[in-house]
Image 1 (cartoon, rainbow over the protein chains, first blue to last red):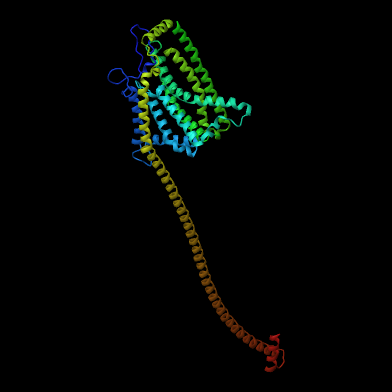
Image 2: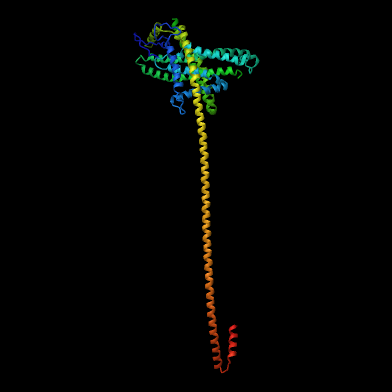
Length: 251
Length: 74
Length: 179
């Protein structure tokens, strides 16, 4: 979130999308797949943050936890309980994968709130693979666990027979819309908040409205802190719900 | 001209976010109403609340996305 | 002003806008590559180190809490036991005290009884002595009375002009005094 600069002409310049640019940190402007870009930097920082929180902070193995260890234990208990509540005991086998998703998203979201930071989760190139991984993983798991009876999920036996084909079509469509909404929700929320803050920042160049602009940035920032956590939570809980469908398709 | 039309379209699409906000508020208010009637069952339903909010919000984000696409990608 | 600003912004946007960087396909490969790297790294960190460690910490804490609760229950049982022992000691002490008091009372009663008995005996002795003395005195008095009565009778009879022999007078006085 760089601050918007005033253009030479004296008018306001809104460049809310510039913060999402992927740039190489060194060398020329060509982005190869292995180039160390700002996206790569902040993705790596998210990994580092996960390491610091879950490994370094718990290295003392204190019976009475300190602050950092409490947060690590809270994160563990939070996701563990979520998986157990939604997917049941057999869902706990997939707990490390879900915890991986949650920790990556929550860390990337929060690190993206730092000024001048890049938010990996605001890019469809990041959220779509995440959502596709969940979608493909859950679908394959559903067929492996239940065989062809996994398709029974689309055949609503509690509905009247005449309605069932129509319902099956709706269910099928909604099933394939899942990865779309799953990924667009996360990237969209991240992008929206950051872009709105950037627009407020653009208004701050105008002396008359700058107090309101700063106030607006502050308010949006508070909302963003909330949204960053809620979006990570929602992504994780929806992953759990999809996983439950794969494990028990007849509910 | 075409770009200006796209901006108008973006503004119209952005209305969708406000309408989605009504939906999210509706979900939250219904939850609160139910929770006050039966507070003991409320804690177990917070996950459902967030799933409902997420679905309502996703549609608002779709319209926001359409607005963004019209602004910057058309 | 507002329209000018908008036009300016629009003009500026058209010349320097980057569009949506999210739709720039040339960076997708890069982002996906680093994303996968990050996910694999996080998964390895979590599954190899972090999750087992946190699970162990939580289990250990649970164990400690369970142990502490058990220990607390032990202590509580001990406290209850101690209280019972204290109560018992108190009851015993009270019973002992009662016993001692009763004993003392009985002893005192005995002493008292002895003393009373002794006193009774002494009183009885004194009484008997006194009675004997009184009897003696009375006997003495009677004898004197008899002698006086005989003499008086003899004198009276003599004064009356009669002649009374000693034997008759004595018999008469004796029979009168008896009656």
